[in-house]
Length: 305
Image (cartoon, rainbow, N blue to C red; front, side, top):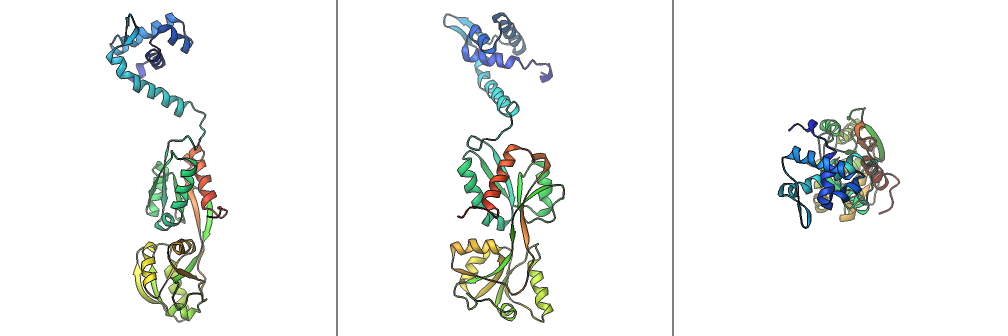
């Protein structure tokens, strides 16, 4: 059966009859005459090849076929009212929706708990999904709607994406609280001589450090290299190692262990953490609400924890 040949105005008629089991009551609800509603019932019977309702001493009773249709017809009409005919607002406390966010491993560690807590407090029915993607895959995922927002420092994303600044990210040195350099501002020579644990990522920060030291005739003592900042805390806690990491990550590590942050004796570039989204969802009320929520709780002006 071709859906284009179906009069979809018959669905509210069927729904009203199933709820009221009375032609007169259904006609009153739909603001139709009883004859017009009876005519619509006739077309429904012809369309579906079933009597749908039979008259008994207890009124009009639905057939097995009509009973089977009650739930899907009601669901279809509710979906049309809520998703097609609604004015398009977003009520967080009533929303039942899923959002997918893309963050790096550092972003997941630093920002994800704040985002989850803020969304949970305002919109308990909203479900969040977390994805980590290579930078080249983020733009296409946003365009296809597979990701609603990307949060992080992604300088290689397409310029056609919308973006919103959250905060600037600098770097610090991190050591255990009992490290010989803890509480000091190390010189360049002391910094180079320390046993370094190096995490090399696409940001190029570690390479920049090596270049600046080389210009001063110095080189680092690299004790270990690791693929992720998140593997650092147990290692730093176990020995006299130094790692250069994002400042906000150092703050979070400090909440779960006894570490000391060091001001670095050499300048490093500042990166900016931003929200990124596709223009298809720029005016989507749910996306707007989520962007504003993240900005309030993760941006420069976020409330104290």
